[in-house]
Image 1 (cartoon, rainbow, N blue to C red):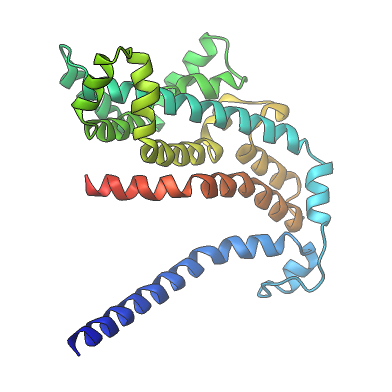
Image 2: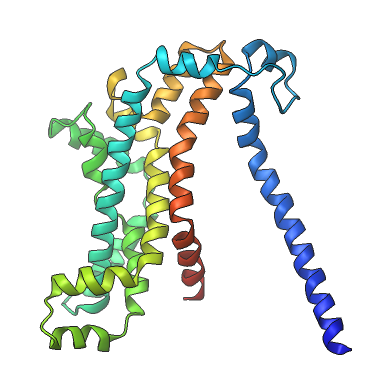
Length: 279
């Protein structure tokens, strides 16, 4: 009898939690759905029927205008190059440096790690002018390199990977050394597969950060063909200020790669956040 009562209470509590999470999910999804729906409407319909979630007359004019009257695919390539290179390099450097700080012993280790963590407290706005001057001196101004090279080291990524590397048993690494494995082989065949949840979470954080970055491209780039998508969206919206359909279509197209990446790394992202909380 008591077991049935407890099971009923457990079912009710899970049902309540599910309903609450469903309402919260709908609350967050609605703006995206509204934007996607408006991208299939004409500008006239958006202005006359702003409360309608579904289009009365389905049209692709906004997408056609975005793809034909702007170098969208060139902007997409620029964003893809910057984001993919930064994500790949940050994952490699963060995991490597995190592993070194976790398993190697050297003088000044704690001091260096403390200095590294302290950089996370420096507002990005304070480094914009020095970074602009440095990129200009190096001849990288108005190139994609100005958005890539300064981003190779990520303090948060190093900290996250170090926390996961701390949980790796020393006996595992020592046994690999006894079997004749070198440090490079240990890192790529033992360490990296063991911290996949951290790398998945870091990949999503990094991808979102650089895919949605607007301020750095605004400072470092001044030619239309070299723009990344967030900056290009602002430029396109300014040119087509009266065409809301095209603006919504551009916003929807920019969201597609982010959604795909999140779906791919969702499992590792959730696992990484959960395990980080446990630590």
